[in-house]
Image 1: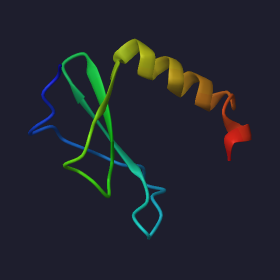
Image 2: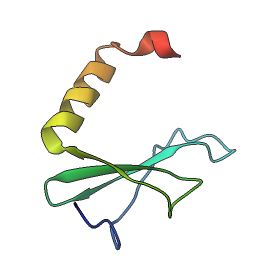
Image 3: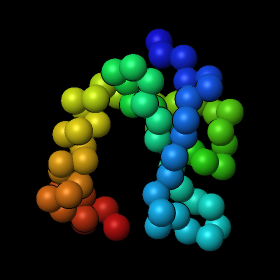
Length: 67
């Protein structure tokens, strides 16, 4: 399990004023995703390849029906 303590977390520039967003960080070959409202909460961890596949699908509109 990857240790994300001390990781540099970032969020989208399009984050809503209410603060509802997710944050991402990379530690070695693992991408972590967490809820910005609960920074001490759980972190979902993905390989760089898995995260890249998600970003590719998002860029091609594969998840647009979820909005």
